[in-house]
Length: 410
Image (tube, rainbow, N blue to C red):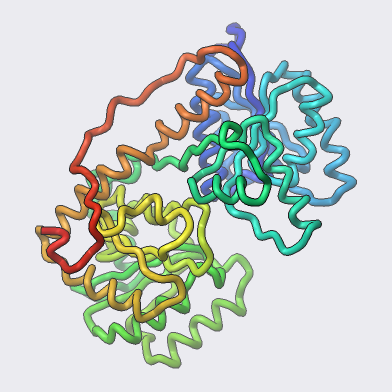
């Protein structure tokens, strides 16, 4: 869309900051879809390292302190957002976090704009005050839930009728997360950087260093696995949690796993990281709203083991595309690791095809963007010029039986 063209519609998305998370990625992906559909995409945030990407996709950024949980600033943000609605003649405001959702909700009421929210997680409700604070995310005319698990949380705690909830899973950019796109040079760089032993089977856990990601569970499982040919890499920055990192390093040392388990900082080339993995693990002890790791691992054709709760139950077809193990259970995780590491090349190829097809059919960026634009179109009472992705390859039907043995991949 050139400057001389008038946009068909304007959507304002609000997110605290534009960092490296999944919510931020979805915000940017939807903004690109809005622009492609002939609309004007405005993102309101408190800044972040991904601001330069917006100019490349033709989106506009407005900097406001929408990250703040200070009640006074949140109150001031009502007028600030209301001014932006009028400035851009925005038809819809889409809030992607709780604090800005409070401000945006009131601003939309004042400015007569439609209001959409996205619930990214089952937020902790530790008391009535916290429940009220979290409740802003349930005020959207349409509330987007990123999984059936999150939708159930909204219905149970905020009594939302099903017609106000739209389930739109997060989407994976398959042009980036595909085995064919990773060069040998990229693999060599990471192998050297992480000092991976030659010929080792690599067990990988991607996820920032925070306790609920289950690093301790994997360390305990590695001790029980007791295989010298297996090397474990935990990828994630501590984000200031230095005490937790030291706790993990002490546990690794106490179990004599120093030569077999390594913690590395945030990786900027996750497709290559996945390709180095023999098995990918998501060991979260608390249920995740969606969890990108299982979906990305399957897109890359890697065996995936995740804990049996939250969004992982929807992204992994148990006994068909991956393993689901009991949370906080090192014995169960070690058994699943042993089974996954025992797959032969044919079984791995079958598993890879199933996983890649499952993601292509259900969890692509194009599907996420198109479904979100349909929500906007419904509220605007119009049909947007959607850029529909080609029909994905349809693979084998889902198996209804869980893994009884390795014959599940035969």
